[in-house]
Length: 628
Image 1 (cartoon, rainbow, N blue to C red):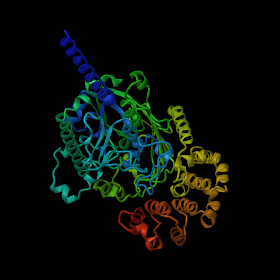
Image 2: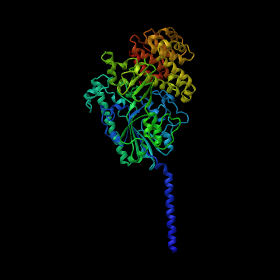
Image 3: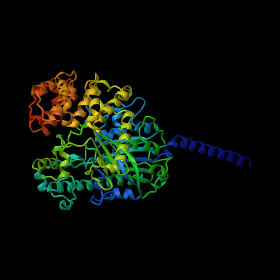
């Protein structure tokens, strides 16, 4: 018996020891047990219009479609911005770019993250995740060292600790705009895999062999991207990870044929998005897998969605809200039917547009509608489709829909996307839609003021005064920004009613009220001639160069004489590269729309560092202006 007792005590000791060992391992690694792996598969520059999964004229992408069979297809997924750096800055921060100063592409300066907020992968790292990005970042925001465990062309989830959960972003550049920068010779000698003669052309594009080839070529690129996605998914499967990994597929913004990338139309914003769930994690999907969801989801929501899936608290400063994970129901997300979007400087081309979509209606506010969409942009016009479209416009060979791109826009536009998915029939003046227009206008105005929207200050002024802490700068100047929004919206009422307030704005001691007063005058065009003498006085005497250039813009666009020497002088006086670029944008616009305006500007009159390379934005503007 004593031996039995001895062995029994030893057995009990061993069992207790093993239990303690395993419990220690369990509690040490418990955070790994309850957290899914999360992967993003991101293709560049492609709206939903090019996938058969969304559009009958799109191309089949078998690997993406396989993900959809075991996931959710979001019918209404939107980038906040129609260009990569602004879209990606929105995603990584979870913040509206015009609120934090990250809205300009390409950035002149990087902005800091809002105080107390980190790029969202940082919170995943703190929760035990291994975070990797392969490889595009393109943030307009200063990145700390705590965001990624690795971010490079070699970044992989495979370097994590055993059983450690991971968040991995895999970018595919195959569909990027640059892949459509081919020559006429290349077009002749390189037939497409997809039949170009069967290409369906958007109604605002000319139906030419160039456009047919470009669409077919773009479909080819989608199929190549799908193959690369398939290779990545096979690797996940071979690594035994598919059963524990939630996979997102989406396009990083719309594009890429003319009037998409860089523009606030649906072709620039409405992206494909599919989210695959393995059975183990299907309880985190508020919608049945293998179905389509009509809820509106936005890039602003991606950061909080991933944090919610990982069981990580969402910081209060994030503007978006999760659409997947615990605590969400199908009924709740299906109530979401709106999206806010923005477009600002696009390389050297300045503009300021904001949009609100609610259900089938899209409201666009063009704050500088005289800045024609077709205004020259060096990188865009490398594409033969852009070049041909411009040539056909000059030749008078386009129909009314195809001409819209080259003409001044209206201050506001309203589209019924159910009957007009390509946004070519503006309903802003339709009395039957008046209530919808006014309601969406008011909602957009309130949103811009509440952020507040930093774009109502000129970019050079923001960089000088607000770069150190953009959010604090916006809050400090919130009432001034609201006043500028109100001045800008004077263009929405009859000139007779707006005139007294415009006159007051032009006399204001605040240069940016004068600045916006002039923009509104330019929007009214010759209707504002009663204020012409005051505008001429501003052109010659104002203390602010940017205000004087806005006066020149008004006079030049309305066929009035402008001293060429004065234009040259203002460029010479530019105190910064952003200021020079903004003023040169006006000169480029004048040369584009006013056939009688022709000026040569000496590039040696500015800081040589601003025009050091072909890719410098100021240099691009000089090349365009002096080529006329």
